[in-house]
Amino acid sequence: MKKVMKWLLILVLLAVIAVAAAGTYVYTQMQPVPESEEAIRITIEPGTGTSGIADIMEKQGLIKNSFLFVSYLKWKSEGSRFQAGIYDLNPGVTYDEIIGKLNSGDVVKAEMIRFTIPEGFTVKQMAEKLAEEGLVDQDIFLGIVDEASGLSGELLSDIPEDDQLTHRLEGYLFPETYELEKGSTEQDIVARMFEETGKRLGAIADFDQKLTASGLTLNELMTMASLVEREVVADSERSMVAGVIYNRLKADMKLEIDATVQYVLDKPKERLLHSDLRSVDSPYNTYLYAGLPPGPIAAPSLKSVEAALAPTASEYLFYVTKKDGSGEHLFAKTYKEHLSNIEKSKAMANN
Image (tube, rainbow, N blue to C red):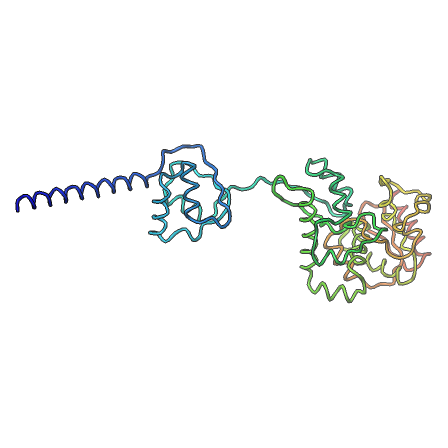
């Protein structure tokens, strides 16, 4: 009996030692690895389970034992809210700190590129600006703009494939400040700008109904808006100028807008000569051809689009820029009044 009791005591003692050893091992293995100020970057792909995440962290030296980490997650009912992404973790963090970071999605912020496209820019000007900033190859950018390659959506179906168009997506790359991930391609940049145009048009209240009521196609509307953009400086005059352009169209008058001639020239001139207005043979030249140009001549702002949708009703058929530095216009109903306004404008320049 004494021998039995002796062996039982020995077994109990061994069990206690084993449990203590196991507990010590588990405790030790669950402790943070040695601290380091140098972060270790790990990538968690979408769909990666907790076991896969634990394996990644063990291999990278962030935890000592992946099995114990997964067991801890199960005990704490954690792991279901982990977010995919790229993380920087410093060796020495605890399980709870790791869990908190993965739950919050505290990922490494991607390096970004930032650029601004001014209102009224042509796609050629956009390509030149982005190329100067080292963000695109100018020819590749314009090639995508011309072919609208790799793009999709309802907006694209409303843009004609017309040989008369200088650039198919002219007027459809929204002027705005953009941020994209570093390394974005020309395709990425064009797609983002094109997508923004769709969003902005869609944000206009009752846009489809207003477009239908205008009697214009989307391409005609954007062309009208681009003319307003290039003709107007003062926001208060956008709708008025749009109304004048509509009035001239209804009266079968040529629009005779200088900006349409400038668009055709390889290099815009500071001052157009009378010979320029008549010698540039292009469907965009509104001095030679009646009606709207085949497509937009620049990227219109949302204010110009809204003006084209809601022109101010008037009897004006003419306008001339005031030469007083205000950028505003003098409006006239008749050609005689228009000639008088031209003289008034000249007089402003001399004052």
